[in-house]
Length: 85
Image (cartoon, rainbow, N blue to C red; front, side, top):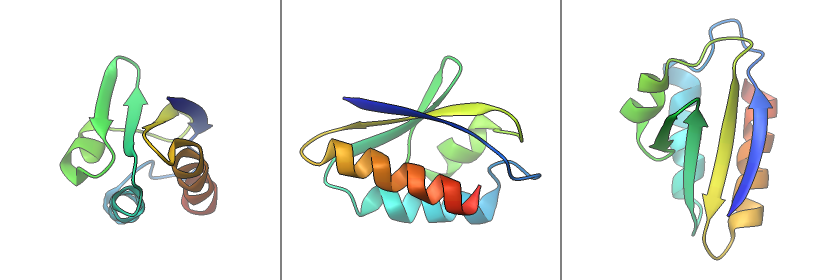
């Protein structure tokens, strides 16, 4: 399993538009991708789960990937976060 951390810079946190982008990216991976905030973890291909995390600006999320392309999947998700959040 690969785990990377990212602190959200977007003033609105993770809202509907970036959540949709995250879901699309997660579905392109062969690995399972999860987002974790505190003690909550959700599948990154579940938009309602992502929204339910309630991630706000300044909060750190963990990107976790497990599977055949986990390193690439985690890095691609981190890049997406850097570009959009």
